[in-house]
Figure 1 (cartoon, rainbow, N blue to C red):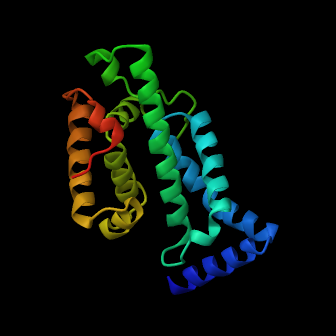
Figure 2: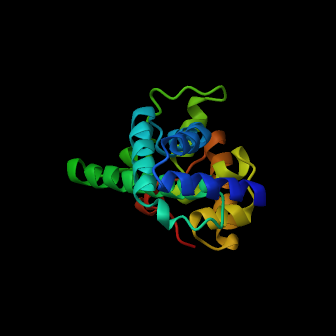
Length: 195
């Protein structure tokens, strides 16, 4: 781990100095996982591409703010998660302006129109769409990437106990959704829960 952090520090120092090859290495080593993460977060490949681009642009502009205490990819994922949450808030505001949110509208999951994964299943995407941002992020980081609750807490900027609660609630909601017993999605779920 220390070697990986040192490698990340070396890359960022070179990137800060204007080394394009360092930026390409950073991009190449993190792009695919960040893109997949964003596809699951927003449910739309085109939007995920836009958010990915914004993530790297923000990282480029703020590279000096990376302190080197955690892997560079964790820092990039934090930026990506923040951008995806902002995107969801914009979508929610648009929905509020254009139509009253009745139960049928509130239950609609984001459409993963173009997303194509080996494990793709419409019911799975619909169930993921019913989770709050923090629940979905915690579930994917834990189950899909195998990260520890401590790592997830650092990434999401909350207490480890909170990530455990998000994970437990996400698993419970996924089980219910995949069995056909779901509760309606409420506005608080779209904006993330703060336990």
